Amino acid sequence: MSMRTLTVRIKRYVPERDRSPRWEEFKVEADPHDRVLDVIQKVKWDQDETIGLRRSCAHGVCGSDAMRINGVNRLACKVLIKSLPSDVLTLEPILGLPVIKDLIVDMKPFFDHYKSVLPYLINDDPPPTTERLQSPEERARFDDTTRCILCACCTAACPPFWGDNKYVGPAAIVNAHRFIFDSRDRGAAERLDILNDTEGVWRCRTVFNCTNACPREIKVTQAIQEVKQALLTGEVDTHSVVNIHQET
Amino acid sequence: MAVTARSRRVKPAGGFELAAWYFMRISGLFLVFLALGHLCIMHLIHNVESINYNFVSDRWTNPQTGYIWRLWDLTMVNLAILHGFNGLRQILEEWINRAKSRVVLRTGIWIFAGALLLLGNYAILMFVKDADYLKNRRDASSDAVTVRADVDRGASSRHPAAVPAFDVLK
Amino acid sequence: MSVYRRGLVSRLVEGLRYGGGAGQWSWLLHRITGLGILLYLVVHIWDTFLVIFSPASYDAIMGFYGGKIHGVEYPLLRWAFRLGELGLFASVVFHAVNGLRVILFDLSPIRAVGAQKELFWAVVALFFFIMIPVTFIVIHALVAEPTPVAAAIVFPRNFVQAFVH
Ligand code: SF4
Ligand code: SF4
Ligand code: FES
Image (tube, rainbow over all chains, first blue to last red; front, top):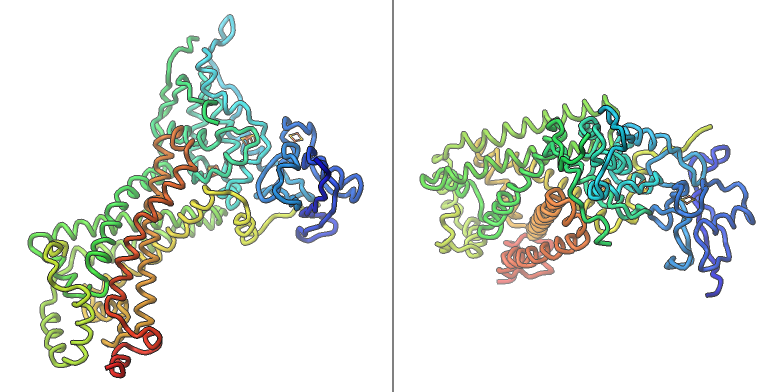
C-alpha cells in the first residue's frame, strides 16, 4: 500500500497561551501500517514539538494514550491508519476530565474513583498453610474484568460521567467486579455498599458507550449489570462460568 | 478455608437509589399498559375532538364501569407523576452535582410533584357530575343552532354515536 | 498552572459529538421523549383538574385542543394539535418500547446485554409497527372531512365553507 497524506486536526490547549482549546491542523505523510500514535509522534518530531501527549508502551498494555480519535475513545497505539475511513484524523483529549495540556488530561479523579472501590483482595480469614485454592470455574467467573488496563476509555465515554464526574464510572465498577466475584475475596459486601451509593452503579443508564470504547474488549456493561443484580438480590454467585469469551 | 460454596450471601441491599431504580422498572411496566391503553382509548377509539365534559363525567360516573376507569386513572396518574419526576431528578442530578444545589433541586421537584399528585387524585376521587351545567349547556347550544350544528357535525360525523362495540369504553 | 475544565453547555455539546452509536442514540431519545411526556403530563393534569373546578373552562380547553376558539374552528390550530398528538403518541410508544429493552438488560445481564445492537433494531421495528397504523388512524380522522387545503391553512372553517358553498 502506498503512503497516505493525512490532515491531522488536533484540539490544542496550551495553558500558557490559550484560554480554551482550539483546533490546529497538520499535514503528514503516513504509511497505512502506521498507527495513530506514530502519526502524532511524526507531527511532534517534525513539525511542532510542543504537542503534549501521554504514551509509554506503544503496544496497548500500559493504557496511557487514551484519546478521542475521530469522535470516539481509543488507544492511539491500537488504531491503524489503514482502518481510517477518510484522510482526516481528528484528535481530542478524552471528555469529562480536566485538560492539563493538549491531549493530556488530569487522571486523578479517575484513579480516586478506582481506589474508592477497594480494588485489592480482602480476606481476613486465617491464612491457610498452602495457597488459597480456587477452581478453574471460579477463576473464569471474573476473568473478563481482570484484563482492565485502567486507560479510562470507558469512563470518559460514559454520558452520565460527562455530566457528573462524581459518578464512580465504569472502570471502577469493572475493577470492583473483579474482586466481588472472586471466590477468595471477602470484601464483596463492603464494595457493594460503596457501589450502592447515589454516585454508584445506579448512575449507569446502559448506554453501552463504555463497552464499545474498551480497547481490551471487556464486557463492561455486562459487568455493571451483574453488580446491579448482586445488589438487588443480595447474592454473589462466584462460581457459574459466565460465557466469557464465547460471543465475540 | 474451603472455597467450594457456589454463592455467598451479602448484606441485603437497600437504600434510596436502589429503591428508586427498582420503582422505575416496576412502574414502567405498569405504565406500558396503563398509558398506552389510555392513549388508545382516548385517541384512537375515541377522538380528542369528541372528548368534553359530558364524555368525562359519563365515563367516571357510569354505575357499572365508572369505578374501573377511576381506578385506572388513579393508578396511572400516581405512577406517571412519580416515574416522571424521579426521571427528571435523575437527569438533573447528572448535570447539577453540587450537594447544596441538589438538595434545593430535590426539594423543588418533590414539592411540585406532590402538588400535582394532590390535584390529580382530588379530581379523580372527588368528581361529581354537574348536571346543571350539562343541562344549561344543552339549552345554550339549542339557542345557537347554526354554530353548534356545524361544530357538532365535525365531531359526530367523524365519530358517529353508533360505535356500539366501544360504548363500554366510555 | 491552570487546567481546562469544560462548562456545562460545552460538555453537553461535546457529548453529543461523541460517536456513541445505537446505545447513545436510544439513551438520548429516551430522555427527550421522557421529558416531553412529563411536560405534557403536567399540562394534562392541570386541564383535567378543570372538570371538577370549572366544567365550562374544561369544555373550552377541550375545544381549544380540537382547534376551536368560541366554537369557531381554526384549521391551522387543529392540525397543529393533531400533529402534536401524534408526537405525544410516538414519544410514549418509543419510551415504552425502549424502556422494555432497558428492563431486559437488567433481567439478563448476559444474553440481553450481549444482544444490545439487535435489541435496538427490535425497538425500532416495534416502534414503526405500532406507529404506522396509529398515524393512519389519527390522520384519517383529521382529513375524513375534506377542507379546501390552501384556504384552510389561514381561515376558520366556517368562513371557508361560506364561500365554497
Ligand atoms: S453502560 Fe453505563 S457505565 Fe457504560 S457508558 Fe453506559 S451509562 Fe456509562
Ligand atoms: S474497562 Fe476497558 S476501557 Fe475501561 S479502563 Fe479498563 S481497559 Fe480501559
Ligand atoms: S502507549 Fe501504552 S497503551 Fe498505548
